[in-house]
Image 1 (cartoon, helix red, strand yellow):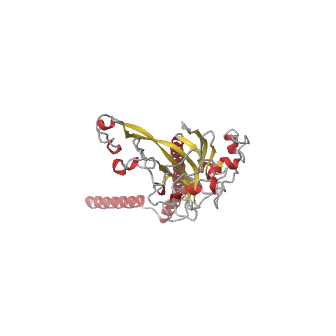
Image 2 (cartoon, rainbow, N blue to C red; image 1 turned 120 degrees about the vertical axis):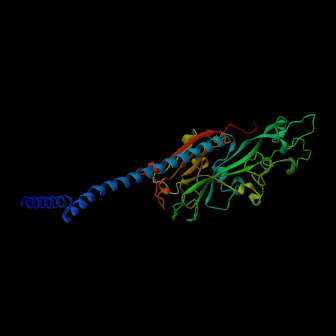
Image 3 (cartoon, rainbow, N blue to C red; image 1 turned 180 degrees about the vertical axis):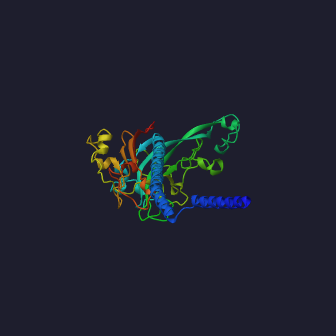
Length: 363
């Protein structure tokens, strides 16, 4: 009898434990619903915060990339311009009198979306390019870099180069320069260079002052568009050969320096005497009259949609140029341009520098 009672008590105890365990492990539908709502209320603001942080980080990264690209372009142009011998001002580039303008002699002169802004002559140094007269057999420029022994018999030489920096306005929304693709593309800065070749000091025919092509490497040869009859006493005459129509001209291959230059006119108007003030109110050396802003400032004002996002103030007589470039970070993020203003100026970094060419005519 006692054993039967113990068995019944043991069975009843085990059943009670099972019911208690089942009660502790389970959750009602109401509890699940309340938990889901609480999780939603907590996670949603956190998710929005994370997304906002990612967008902010992206915008800051884009701003940084634009500023770095702009600084790299400024460093390159300033180094290039420091070797200038002669810098053309607006009167020489965009003079309405064709006989006093060099525009028709510049690359892409028929393309209204490719605008010359900074044009100058410079001396370019070619290393180990011209043989020295020796008692041994005369070597040729092509051999100057063949061996250390040849390099000892060669000197460096300087050649003239015509350099032109352009503002390119892209019109093809599918172009690689117009990403993200949109109806209004950013502009870019491109560079042309037309160089002279290594001249033969022993040439007897003055009409053929160069070495033969077989005696030189490509970098030592004259570009097809270079005019060997150019004279600094007449800087707007014979700047290039036959208006660059020669298809072999190296000037037909521009090098893009930087993209995402602003393509909108800023809401802030430029000072009407910016160049005059920055260059110290220069005067015409012939008339002693102050040079006007129109004569000094080279910009895209003659184009259908002027931006003034890349322009130069040039004092030709003093061989000084002041260059300004305005980038557009927002265009990297969206498919259309937004005009710069005081509210979004952080996305439109501007770089300005002024430099005097180290070279000079006749020196």
